[in-house]
Image 1: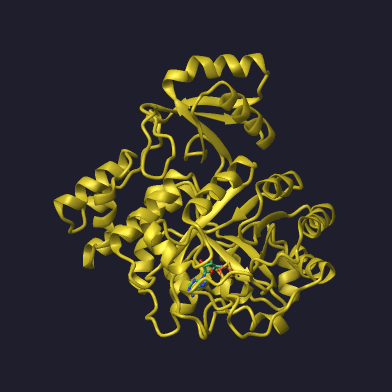
Image 2: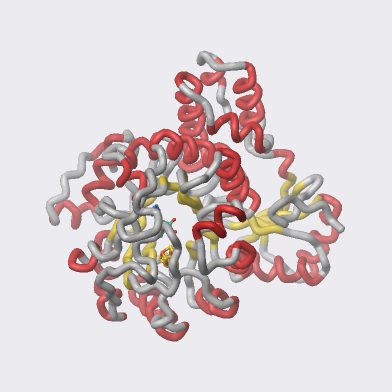
Length: 450
Ligand code: 5AD
Ligand code: SF4
């Protein structure tokens, strides 16, 4: 029996990775390794071994020879097999010049050498104050710059239905909440996607409550049309589905699937989710990856009764599950829900979580969430300065937007807001936007931003 950690992911004594040249080669290889009984995990390719969007197969050194043989025999197209001992090293010398404790210095040394932090160290980082807080944010910013660079990734979400069969205690669109419900037709969705396409957005996020009206066939039809007409990247955020559906969505070209764990604490997960099972959510996280999609997860900070210990576990969960896109934002009370009178999550703690997640998970996408932009007018900019690199626009048609209040007074992050945050954080906009068209539309964009 292999050594297994708390989250039942494989632990490797001396981890190696196999980086393939394409998703299909990666899935094919994983299948072969599984059949040969070689324990493996899918992880975001670490910095220095491939692009931020790619997935690597992690396995133990003791199987290296066997993996090489399998690759040869099956003519797998691959970039390389690498030892994670030779991981990328960071230069954090400027942090040592700051006024920080010896404990923090020891943690910084580990981060520099790219050695995994343990839970106690993560908790220490989550509790830093004053100059140590500044050191934490600076360290996350350095790692973000090394891993991702200065350009912001901009994605756009279309919230196409606010019907939901579930009753999550924190959520404003929960089943029992009396709100005006809507569903968009396929045509309406495609019209919105076309607007994004013209602006140059490369990835659309299709988000809804858990709404069985959108059957597998209806979803596949929408996905295929978007792929055919616009060749855009697609992220689905439609809740838990069947294993078979994950495969069909992946085969139809869905690139990412967003299914947040919300909290990795079983106790808290069960407290806030009357209809959900913790083990099922964890299993689905794995199924999404095994279907060939990149898994997006994350959670809420400052949930009623949540502890720092649990937040440290949340971050470790993202690392151990090889999550590619990690959205952590503050919990915000939503009108009409059981938690409407609870206090919102704390801004500073939310920023620390973003920073620590960058330090722990490194070569991944971290959104500056809509929730943090709602909590504080500068929340998005501050998150971008604390390690985040992605902004998700809300691209739901204006007439419907107000009905998708998963929490109250939601900030309608649009392109103007994203441009402002990018400018305020002294970063750059993505290359792929259609700037001539945006200027025609009246957006003011200085050359330094491009
Ligand atoms: N506060 C903050 N985030 C929330 N979400 C849902 N309800 C709330 C809330 N009250 C987030 C969850 C969910 C995503 C769609 O929005 O993380 O996954
Ligand atoms: Fe439904 Fe998602 Fe809200 Fe839960 S969090 S009630 S599944 S929309």
